[in-house]
Length: 438
Image (tube, rainbow, N blue to C red):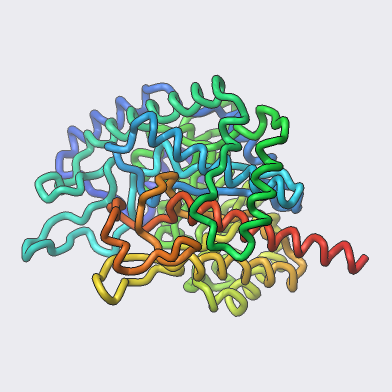
């Protein structure tokens, strides 16, 4: 295999990347990004790698979540605090119910990109550039031109976001993250038990470690990612985030994204969907982790409820055959998208997403492998109406009340908390059943 550099991906075919009309401006922007300070430290990336290895062994559980695609307009203190608190609270719930420590990873401070099926789309009878996320172009029609200067805006919004989150965590008390609101869960058949758990969580003397979090995003725009790659010692790291992942649309074995990812030392995620062939998965893992480093690779499966057993069983078999260690994570949202019949809104059913997680747990149990975590698109905003179902009984008619997302629909606050309790309860049930068999 040829030598790797942060630019060697340029010799390979690339998918899902914006092409810049003004090449000179793009070069100027990327040169500037290459000189700006990193957002995270290599030591933090290595710490996360250790945590992922522990999750792969069943010693921790990963809670990963956040926006489908962040928006520049949401870079506000209240929204950022609310988003972080939700992920931390979901982690606290799982830790309390199961007794297993969690790893909290936020889709934040860089998740500004969005893959699209085609570079253009027709809106109101006019063909325009597809919206690919705020760091590429704007959602409004007048802002649809792909603009490299937005990459700089993305960097500075990411910097402001991470600066606020770090300062919040350093100054806040752990009790700030245990004030879990369950008013919307009153219709749950498990409400009395949830109330008891929340009281116990609030009564605990939690340490500062419950406030730890890591950042992640899909590394799709490779010229941006390469510009934010730094050499630390004899290794290279993408220091725009602790973890970056390859999307299901960009994981071609001979493609530019795999070439870029094979050379960075971050822990990396790989989305694996129904189109992934077993031999392709083996080859991909060999390229990304030839030294069989534990915690290096997180496989993020995304099949859809009802499809897990047939697909995941074969993928687990393939991974076992190649002998490369991975941490398994269930993306429970991207295989469960639907369009509401009454108003054509993109949405998801909470129950379908939770069902996919439960199916993943069952298959891993059957195959003797370990589900290391879950991956959801969520918002800490309580009034958002984007996903159907849950205890609050979100209906299609209710979707129009506060549908904020520019991209994919997210669980709102109560739907996210409900999902955390459901998953934690199933984990506890599995743990009790395992002990009973001994």
